[in-house]
Each structure stands twice: as structure tokens, then as C-alpha cells.
Length: 67
Image (tube, one colour):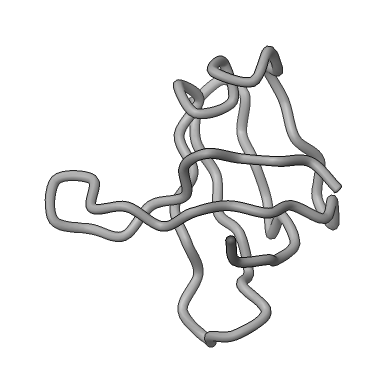
């Protein structure tokens, strides 16, 4: 598991980004990953744990855990 904070999330667009603790590059997060854990929104600054995965050629956050 990696850790970071939500940079922003747009419910209408269905995606957002996480600022990881261990990198300068933001991580994409899609609404389908939130749905898997029973959520429909995450808020700016919220602490989150995730596992990176390859989402059509880009690194994205999956297996989310709200801390």
C-alpha cells in the first residue's frame, strides 16, 4: 500500500487526483474505484491508502482505503 492525500476530485467528471507521499507525480483516481468501496466522493486533503495499477497506459489508484 502507498499513501497520499486527495488533491481534488470532481464528482461530475468522475475522477480526480491523489498527491502521493513518495512521489512528485499525481496519481489518477476514477469513480469506479470509489464505487468498489461504497463511496461516491472523496474530499480535498483526505488521507488515502491505495495500490497503483496500470489503467490503459497511465498509473492509477486502486484498492482504495480511506484513513
